[in-house]
Length: 479
Ligand SMILES: Nc1ncnc2c1ncn2[C@@H]1O[C@H](COP(=O)(O)OP(=O)(O)OP(=O)(O)O)[C@@H](O)[C@H]1O
Ligand SMILES: [Mg+2]
Image (cartoon, rainbow, N blue to C red; front, side, top):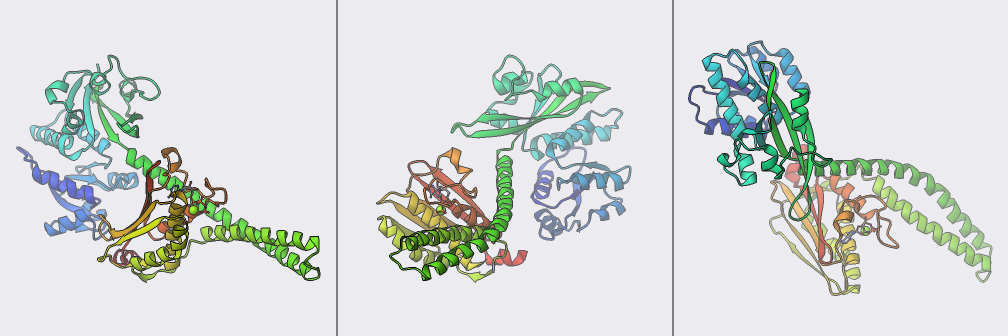
C-alpha cells in the first residue's frame, strides 16, 4: 500500500518514523510521496533524503498511478475536499484531524465485503493508528458503554493495564462513576452518538493537582455495522494549550482594535490640547505673575501638559506598526536600559543584577522600541518590589533554535492568577498614577518583532517576564 502525504510538517515526519518502526505482516504500507509548499518542512526534507518523490503541489499526486492512499496532514478541510474531488476513484484519502483519521480507519476496518488482503491492510492500519499514530487517548466502546479496545496512551494516562480496562464500563474507569457521565461539566457525547448515529463532541473541564484548569476535548464517532450502531470510538485530547493560544490571540485582536481607536482619538485630542496650552500661555504673558488668574492659568497649562503625556503614550501604543529594524546585540540594548533605570532602582534600594550571555546571536530589532519595552518591564519591576528587593535580568540563546530569550525577574509583590490575563490589557492598572499602557506597548513591540512575551508570577514572591525574539538570522530569512 503506497501512501502520499500532503503537508510535510513534523507530523508527516512522525508518520514516516511510525511506519518505519512498525512491523507489518501481510501488508507493506510505504510512504512514496510528500507535498509541501515550504521547501524546509521537516517531513519534506526527510522524504528528499530518502529519495522519495517530493513536490510543492499535491496536484502532482493525481497524475501518478503508484499511490493507493493520500493522507492529508495540513488540517485544512479545503485541501481535503479538493483532494476528494480530484483523486482517482481507486485511491483512498483520509483527513488530518487525528480523531477523524482514526474514525475513518476504524470504519474501513469494519467495512463489509472485503478481500482478505483488504482486511489485513485495514487491521494493520487500525493497530498502527491506535497505538502509534494517535497520541490522544482512545477508547472503543460498545453500545452498552463497555470498553472493547483502547490504546497505550490511554493506559499510560490512567496507569492501568489492558486487562484491567477491557470489558469494564467507560464511566467507571474514567470517572469512577456507576452510571454514564452527565451534568454541565461532564455531558456524555457517547450517549448522543449512540442515539443520533452522528459524531459528537464536548469539552470536559478538570482541575489538575495545582488547581489549574485542564480542558479535554472529547469526540465520539459511531461504529456502524450492517446499518446498526454497534458502539463508538471516543478520543480525548488535552486542549489546554490550544485554549491558551486562543486566549492569547483574542488578546492580540483586542489590542489591535484598541490601538486603532486610540490612534484616532489621540490625534483628535492633540490639536485642541495644543490650542488650550498656547492660549493659556498667551494670556499669561499679559498678566502679572502675582495675579490670581495667572496661577489658575498655570494649572490649566500643567493639566493640559499632563493630558498631552497621556496622548503621547497612546500614540506610542498605536504607532507600533512600523519598527525600523537594524542589527543589534540585545546585550548592548539591555545594558543601556539598566543604566537608564538605575536611579529609580537605587532610590528604592533595589539591587539590579544581570547575567548576559556572551554567545548571544545578533538580532534584527528597532532599538528604540526594544528599549522602551525593556524599560517598561524594569520600571514595573521596580514599582512592584519593596525596598531591599532584587531585580535580575538575563539573556541567553533560547531553547527554541534561532531565538533569544530575555528575562526580567523581580522579588516583588507578584500578580495573582486571576489578574494575569488582564495585565496586558490597555488601561489596566493598579497604580494611582499609572496609564496601564506600559505592558500593552511592550506586548505590541515584541509581537512586531515576531516574538512572544510570557509571564510567571507567585504572589508574595515575585514575577518573571520572559521575552523570546528571533535572532537576526531567523528574522532575516523571514523578511
Ligand atoms: N513586575 C510586576 N510585578 C507585579 N505586578 C506587575 C508587574 N508588572 C506589571 N504589573 C501589574 O500590571 C499592571 C499593568 O502594568 P502596565 O505597565 O501596563 O501599567 P502600569 O505600570 O500600571 O502603568 P504605566 O506603565 O503607565 O506606569 C500594573 O498596574 C501592575 O498591577
Ligand atoms: Mg508600567
